[in-house]
Amino acid sequence: MKKRLAEDFGIKHVEVRTFHSYGVRLLTKFKPDTPTDPPKQAEVGQEVKKILEDLLKNDRTFAKLVLDYAVEISDTTKEEADFEDETAYYEYLRQQEYVTLKGSEEVKSVAERDIANFLFINGVPYEYEPRARWAKSGKGRRSYKPDFELPGGIFIEHRCIDRAGNVPPWFDYSKSAEENSEEYKDRIVWSESQFNHQRERKLIQTYYYQWREGTLIEILEKELLRLGVELQELSIDEIIKRVNDMRALR
Image 1 (cartoon, rainbow, N blue to C red):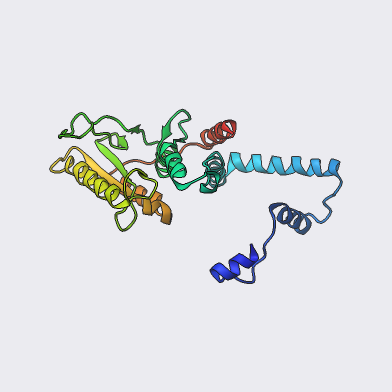
Image 2 (tube, rainbow, N blue to C red):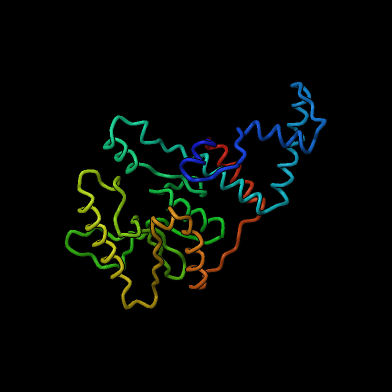
């Protein structure tokens, strides 16, 4: 790892340790008299557990970080190396669904999961992929189902495109990348047109590249606040309950 950091990223003079090695180092530094025999280590483990439980109950920031961690480790998505060929991997990705903090709700991408979780944590009611009966239907068009509908006629569409406007290669392996991207762009233009000249309905659009760059939630929050959506975070007790729910899913 140290060699890869230096060769691939130019990052040098860093300390690289395993998780357990780092834990031992911390114990040695801050509690030099830490015992090494198993029975005594169990006592230390109980002390650490109590500290973590106290932090969960009294530190909202820590509780939210633990919740984020619980969400991430619940993701069991396989890697491309687990499949015989690229086509099988792409088909697998297209069939994946991701559980949100609502518990029984599944969405179609990690980015949509993050959006749903942000809304949930901040007390924003939403419906996932509701049928928009007010939208116009055209020849060859299925019923329009925006990704998220919020109270007050606010809709969120997450666009699965990069900065160049292209969809990922796994989007539809049966067609070329160019065909997929052109069809997807047409769908975006059509869905945007459903909101033209409408005062009672507003559209927020987020993008795959924002998720990749780590800016999606920040941008979404600004857009929600701009439209007057009230954000009210869950209580610490509610966050802890969700942490335990995510642990149960494992």
